[in-house]
Structures are given as structure tokens and as C-alpha cells.
Length: 476
Image (cartoon, rainbow, N blue to C red; front, side):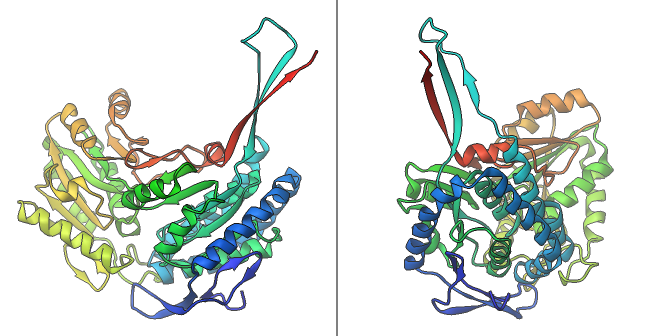
């Protein structure tokens, strides 16, 4: 790619000049930061065909050769981390510190983690239980599933994509990737990184474009696995369009952060700030609801308001900025709508509440009830709605009382109480005395209920990208 600020479809090892150009603008100040040329249905068919053709040879490539390429990409990624971070910040509005964290702590290391995990990925040898014989051997192996159709969001544009891409390439799959239209520039840099690292043509292909391109991709008959991260509504549609393909769906959340009456309040406040205002609240793992025991609610709220008002909001490229803008008008409107609905029903804004352009103030609300829209649905914005409760049973009922089940947290100084509380919460991840926005890259990640299907990261990711195959040997 001759100009890193022009994103083009990447198919068969070439960046293509197709389609009309559109501008990519900063959500902070509206400045043009680049351009993108969008794909169409023809490029979807072309990319899938190229990936399908390349997959057999790629799967037959010696494992150590694939691992060498992953390590080469890892080294190259480290050299380019700052370019990636600056590009992410310019096009989606993450603070530069958040973007660096995405690249250094998460995205870049996926190359190394995938290389190490695939070397340790194991099958099984089972005894025969059907016949009284010692002459049979049953082998359980994992073969690459084939072509992976990948659709990714803008909030972690490189990190989330890199999880699937690195593990798919490690195991011998090929990938056709459709990034978010809000983050084409950083994703084009990632495709360029794969190209420069020496991966064979066709093992990774990238399609620019909007929802129509993604829908054509996930429904394509030659796509074997669909990996999607995004909203629950879109995930439900993808599940219909993908029919009998293998699915990895990481969807929305409405995570409760529960503060029990014996909690360390300073620790709970710090975790709430990260949970509610990291990336301006635009994380599926955000603390969308803060449940506080009535006996400590006043003191907790006072401390949370003080910490919220101390946050620095502004230019995401400024090293001193704690929170940048929300990404687009739709997120701003949803956030404002949830606040208005809560206020109409008796909630009170005790910090923030306003916005200038796409800069929405970090906001704290009290008097929120579990039946308000802001407590039932994913706001995906910088809001901390406080709901009070009387006892552990009520807190569990409220915590489990939505259609989501991705991430939850509970704060207590009694570890046994925290353990039992965590067991009762119906969420894919429950953290005790830690923010909801804590991730470990070698632990399974995914949700229950309408927060998703399957688990990603580490060997769970390899499970999602392979087919289990049984081979029976008769030795006589």
C-alpha cells in the first residue's frame, strides 16, 4: 500500500483500486485523516475464491514455517506499534494511551501467543469401548476448518481482528476480513503488515465497506467459519445468514459491577472509573450498571463523583487526556436517549450529563431502577448508572436480570462471599475485586445468553477455528 492513509481492499496479496472513495474523519475535530475505497459484491466473491484456493497449500505448509512467519510479523509489528496507535486514535477517537495499550499489550502479542499456542495444541488417543479388542486405536485430531469470514468492530480495530487472524493463520485456515467502516486505516496497516511479513498471497484478504459487504461475506457458501464481534442485533442476523457454518459470536454486554457492604470503596471506585469511562464506555465489557449496597451508597457515590469530575476530557492525541470522544453520532444519540429516559423516570444526574460535539462528559446517575432502559440495554457510552440494593439475593437478581451475560464484577473484602456471589452470576466472566474491563489474553472469553456463542483466545480460539476429526485404526 503506497499511502498508509488510503485504505484499499487487499485481495490475493494486492491492494486494489476499486469503488468510490469516501473520507475518514476524526470524531474529535472532524478533520479528514484519510480515505477509503469501498469493496462491493464482486470483491467479496473474489476474496473468498482466493482464500479458498490458497487454503489447501497453506494448511500443508509445515507448522514451523507458519510459526516462523508469525514471529516475523511479531517483530515487525513491534516496530510499527506507534504508527498503529496514532492511526487508531485519529480515526476512532481512543486516547493515545488506550491505543498504545491496544497495540503493545494485546494486538502485537497475539502473533507470539498464537505461535506458542499452536505448538502446544494436542489431539487424543482413545481406547476402544465398542469391542473387546486391543487392536484398535482411535485418534482424535483437529484439522483447519477452511476459510474464516471475519467481521470486526471499530473499538479495538486491530486487537480484536488480530485474535482471529493470528490463530487462524497459525492452524492453517485462511481469512477474509471485513473491518468496521469506522476503522479502515489501521486495519489496512495490519493487512500491509501481513504482506510485508511474507505470508503467502491469499491467506489473508481484507474487504472494505459497510454492512452489505459483511452480509455477503458471512452468507457465502465457501466460508466455513464466521467470527464476529459487535452488537447482539447484528449477531442474531449473522446467525441466520450463516446457516450451518461454525460460529464465533462475541456480542453485547450489560455488565453489573456490584459493590457489597464490606467492599473496599476506594478500590471499587477506581474499578468503576475504568469500567465506565475507559474508551468513553465503548466496550462490550464496560460496567454498564453499578449495583451498590444501600448502606454504603452515599459514601460510594460521593467518591465516584469526585473521581469522575477529575477526569480530563479532550483531544485524544494529547498524552494528558483521560477520555476522548465517542466514535459517532449514533452512539452519542443512544447515550443521550438513555440518560433522558432515566431522568424522566426519576433518576438524577449528579456528575456530567452534557456533550460538545462527540465529546460526552463522563456522567454519573443516581436513583436508577432495574427496569429503566439504561439498566436493561447496552448504553455503550460514558455513563455510570447507580442502582442500590438491600442484600446479596437482590443484587444477584438485578445482576442476572437482563438478556446479556458477558462480564460482571463484585467487590467485597470477604473472599468466600465473593466466590459464592461469583458462582451465582450468569456471566461468561466474573471478576472479584477487579474492574469489568480486565482481560487476560490466555483465558477463555465469551458470554452467556444473548452476549454470544463460543469462547475465544488461546486454545479456545483454536477449537473454534478447527474441525474435530476421528480416525480409527484396525491394527490386525
